[in-house]
Image 1: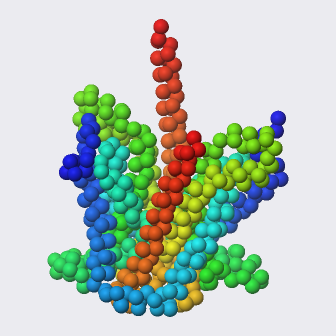
Image 2 (image 1 turned 30 degrees about the horizontal axis):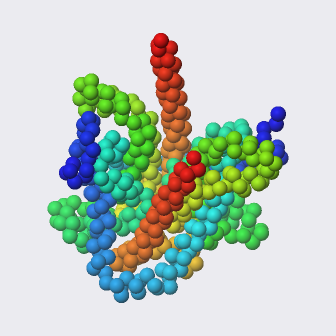
Image 3 (image 1 turned 60 degrees about the horizontal axis):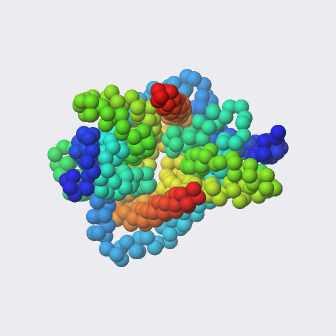
Length: 292
Length: 280
């Protein structure tokens, strides 16, 4: 019998074709063009664009800000997910809304807020500068802006996951005498590791790729306060297209790795869920068989 | 503190620690900067605010930002739904790869997307060379902004609609077919109404993201004042001229509008879950 709930073959082919052409034009072609433009003048030029001093210092700064921002937001994300998914308290939905706030703000506005907070002519910024710490147009400002824009990612990934998993196993561990840390390390962590990994990889991708917020607070000092995306902009505006696309290709590679990890994580989560439904079903059958 | 929070009794430990870390980091990274924004707004004065925001260049940039974001959202609603539908319903080779590719705009830094799209749609680019003879200019015009914002917003629509389509009960469609409905009728009367709340949510998210987008747009827009200058760029150029008050004023208007949209998303989701709940 023909499937009643699908379209005729020409319609199916036409719709699939339109969707694939759209995705090719809007997603795949830009990705291909990055690598094409980067390698247009050969490998030698590509490699020299990546190893010139300004590019290297931009790569270094990008790595520094990611290395600081990712662990901080990781700790925060796990703490927030534990508090929100394991306890009932007043004001919880307000807390979730506030955690999401950085997503609702234009990156440029985010950068502006840090200038208003730590700029040289503000109370806090002036005090810090007197004590030898410049925040805006310096590395601390770049790190702060990066932390802000990547703030919700880990929490966003973990909260729904931990809510759906429930706290039964943790409660059992505690009742059986495990300490809080033991419970977290041996019970919770194995359950959330894939979601955690995905949250971290998303945080990292955004931290290394952030443009708007970092651009506002950076001051664009070559070799000092330029991250890779800002370096891409400078090279592009100087019509150094090979250099710009060479640096951009690093970020595009990062995006590809992110997508790969994401697919792996989704696959593993699915398998984990299937295995746990299977275990529940088996346990139920055994319980039924044990009944007289 | 636990009294004030009305904390329910729980054998699990770690509430004080985890809640403390959460609140501390939230206050430091999110609330403090917002407070700074509000504080400097308070010192601005109403007349100052109004004269900045109502200047022609600012108004035109706001109109451009919201208009292009709206048009991109409409494109994404149509094609995002189509992509989600094809991914859920039709088998084709390489489907998992295509499915992974949909998230590219989430993973690709906006500046990279910006220069890549510009090189594609420039008059001598891979796509632009075919459009130029037809008299269609994309790069360095408002049309280019729409292309960039479409790129940025696509995954929002696909990823909100896709799970809803996956959960649709085929029995309903089978019943409708047996009762003599055509596929088009079923789409109009059964599938589309079920997917509508997720379409609205995804479209609003794409729209909200697009209004604040900066990195991917500034390369392709050409940034001609009054023509292709978006609102976030106005903030940046005011900051470059050390006009922090002006930048703050424009930022406030943008924030106000995006909060309205956040509220709208919440209301729609509540309405949708109520409607969904009533159906069972």
